[in-house]
Image (cartoon, rainbow, N blue to C red; front, side, top):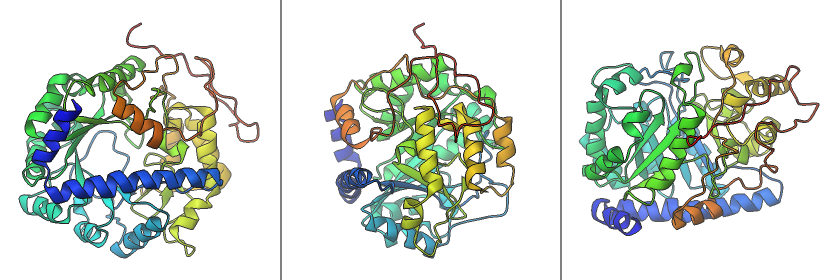
Length: 429
């Protein structure tokens, strides 16, 4: 499949966009990870990848959204964004994820891309603001890849996204990107309502036929003010999704991205490994997008890189979550999140001010950690890429036996620990 994928890229991606992708993201991204490894050996942490939610506004109202999209507009001003990216570049970074809300509602987004042509940006978007003119402007700049969210076909999309005709409007934006020769991906948050529609080989082949270059599957995480826990996948379905991704990488000529497993198939959390942290629309530095608490802000007089590097809050989050689970600490141990927030006096970074109450309302559940069902990478290229540039970077202790949790330091363990996590069940059982 690799030769077919390469030929598709050469034929359908504009030369300038392809070069920027290979150099700014590929070569410079790999070098940023190598610098990150050297920092780890020195006991320093600054993530090689930063995810920036630049605005909270959005035109959709998705089920389970944790962003305050219906509150007063909040965004990171262009000056602060430019200062942050220049600071990160001095640490060797070149790749940034741009999130929202809906990033294309930020009036300075294209100016941001133009100001940092030596960087590469992955823009997480619903695609509905990408006109033919905007797609052509992205082609001229060449340093971004739209990652367009599709949560189901017509009926499912309307239900998941809270509006009408979402699927068709999103496809129009997708087609504008592809016609402009942009390297373009499709992201799906797998949940009960869309897994049968979109976790299929026929859907991937449909994306290939449209010209899409990569797909990104991640699992729905019930957090926020309206959690919709009924949409969360079962352990069997999580294992099924992992197996599907591994098998399709060798069968369908489309790149398939995942961010929660290493080359051995062991689960990981990019926050726990130190590979990424999140900046919210208020400039607050959060462990990850769904942990909406912070101590530091990018407007720290010392500079964002120093604030992130020296943050005791982020350090404790990385260390304690890695001791507790290889999966998602928010889903599996919300009590630990609450304990760390209390320990550091972290701010609730939401505009609704209910993040602690939402943690209290959560029921612990399984995440991507499947200690009895690891599925290693089968394709040699994915195996090598993950082994050298996307793994746990030594963050985790040896895995405990299935059906148990890791022992936590007594001083940091919550006062009323949850019951040990139940053994996970694979789709084969």
